[in-house]
Image (cartoon, each protein chain N blue to C red):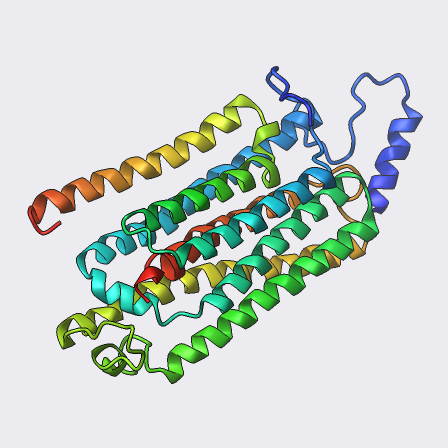
Length: 247
Length: 105
């Protein structure tokens, strides 16, 4: 803040100087617009590598779902639609509050920015809380692949509408749950990283940052948060919904 | 909402709460739709409808929440090429797997 005040005073004392830039404009950029676009371009490139990263998991899911279709249908039907849908709504709402946070930063509204960052944190934590409840249910039901796993629910389903699986196919339900935990776990890790960064942004916003016309950090974090939302937009139907009609 | 500006470094466009609220509403309606449709037996169409709705939701998020609609052509092209490359990779991988276990698919 102090250095900025000094920088502004320097500009004022040399009114004849041709290049008067805001203090946040780095010297290798010509205009603020160019800087903003470059920063955002870099963030998009990072997000494209993230698409490839999650893409590998989606590819594995697609392949194994075709190979062990019955096991994937049975596995999918053990998930809770109400919890999954609630989480989808929570995450979409958090994307909205984040977008409003970006808007607040752009319109130099410090209070609004703080409010929306806080709301985004709360919604993000709510998502993780619900996810924890779902993970706990998997543990109780012995559906976690590995030592904890039991084929019992799939060979002798308690719901008469579920088709019993042969023991070898029931074993393949472990692959479904492995991918379920890998995909939702990797998504949750992105949420945890995101929420951690949000706390830092909130602290900085509280001390007056990002409302001086330079909000690239908030913009870029918004891009990250929306990307995580998009991943869930695809995870939700693939893991929870597309096999439901067999129930 | 104005038409995206054509020149190289477009003026920064601030997207307002009205647009965000509309998109939020659309996303919520689409979520309700995809959940509802999941309980109707459409056979082979179930995954197709679910993924189509997911794609529409993702495009809405990318265009408005992520401001791509208001970005330069360079940015649009880059993002598009990223998604396209992803589709190419999926297609190539599936082609390989399907042709190796011919008849099992």
